[in-house]
Length: 372
Ligand code: CMC
Image 1 (spheres, rainbow, N blue to C red):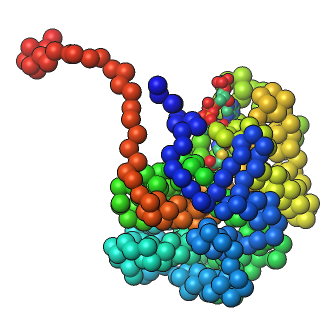
Image 2: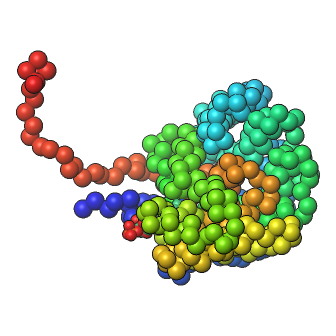
Image 3: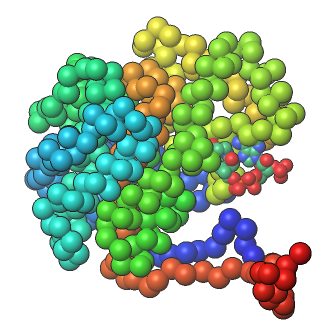
């Protein structure tokens, strides 16, 4: 029997993350995401996902230094960027940029576990630079070179705006990156693992993952959520807006989930961040609209917000343009994707499911000249 959308099909064993959709729990390598979101850093989560344990201080310093050292993109990529900035959407740029990055990776086509670990770190380190460079070029601003003194999240905001973010903004972004870092067999991670299972290279797998993330049912939902907040414009419009949309049988972006039947634990933190940022920046409107949409969707449809809904208003407060919100999801998911690809290589079997044929059978072939 066809399991449409592969719902509940277990496609791989993983040591990286686990979800309890009934109780709204999420763990990375057995650590509760609530603890990681409040106490860890993105760099530490990178270490955790790639090494399956938390680092010592010295190990974390070493990893952070490695990521800092790999932030610059090759002249080849920088040379492509003016054209990409003019011609392509941000996610298409990222898909093309990551694919093109394979051309100048120092490990070339070497596919040893060590080379793949290095490729993973380079992809994690360079993705923020690609996004920021693209944004600077499309807005006719000077490129801002990475600042080696700043951690991953703060450096991204710095390269994007040219100004060092304050500590609270940097921590808020860092928390969202932790929350987005991995999530079991979501569509983009599955895509990456399918590609890796053919023994295609790391860059091919991640290029495919970015392509899968782009769609509005997956990573594209944070951008669609932001557009919805703008369309609603004021909390008093939320009820009418949601009811009209549901009457037209349209989806409310940022709501619902294949696995969570209750609150997405990531949404709990993003809601808090959205409220805090709104208050701190003196602009509580986005949070208020969001909270009202959440209330109406719950009463009309019984659906909970997923990770993408409150991420939208958080990113708005952090100065991230709407069409860069999905690329930011990609830069956050990079450690998860690359760790899954390495895990797939380490114990590989070609992923090749079945299909159920539902077309006509036993048709008689008629030569073209005799077809009426
Ligand atoms: N708005 C309105 N109705 C919805 C929504 C929604 N956002 N999500 C699910 N439903 C309804 C759907 O219409 C269906 O109702 P009915 O049985 O009356 O036709 C029922 O809930 C089941 O929907 P489904 O499409 O079978 O559920 P799914 O598990 O295939 O879909 C989903 C999961 C995330 C694609 C879906 O909830 C959705 O389209 N959400 C909006 C897009 C979104 O926010 N995506 C981000 C997902 S989480 C993070 C990420 O991956 O980026």
